[in-house]
Length: 346
Image (cartoon, rainbow, N blue to C red; front, side, top):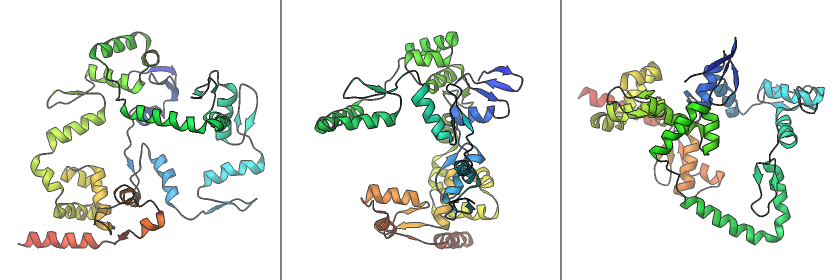
């Protein structure tokens, strides 16, 4: 990926034209454009592109609020939230608008002000009349003026939803892709994507595949992104029919989890050639299994169990969901490890 220097300690990203400090440039490309998320939350299936985001997310799992405002006694989970809240009492306005001179205490108010007051075009269009608006909130407020035509609203929404369900993603011809890539070389990715009405990431993927940036060394197949190459290597050149079946064996899972207990997940990935996410899931399922009382399905995360109950058993009420599964601590792990040792002694 080519990038040009703008200043001594800054770079210009060719994907989005942003000027990024040299210190944070690699992280910007990784998280924004490559969409790589290799930091995992141990309490839910969420993933993040850097440790700072993971740490910020981990706070949401804490029930206690240990940071107290000295002025109004309001409690917060993090010191940063408390500091942001304190601006209300100190009347400190850190966000300054260069266009009109107004200042704001919160970043969210500042962003909304910029969209509403200093945006040149109206991006939100009313489906029932020709009016357009700068923000979704203003469009939502405007729609209330059409209350007399609520029945018409429902019909239009129904037709639009059915049309979206029937429409398939547009498939571009090879000739179109070649012309788009040629155009991108002349005018740049951003401008070409905007002119042709395609996503920048899709155009970047075509260029990567054309230039063989992510090529499989075993079979020579080219891919748009590294994630697709890794999936291909595992599915086509690493995972065999034997170890595929063995992976789903309960004793094998128990062996891997037992190894993790004495070592680490990274060591287990190297030794057993199993993905990081799969091992985390096994540890969770074997160590603290959640069993559906209706069909017996086992999950490691409460979020997945809640989705299961909602989709498979039509149970959406949180209280009813909690009474529809049971949580066992280390029961299945001990049983699986015992079975494994019995097999080994035979």
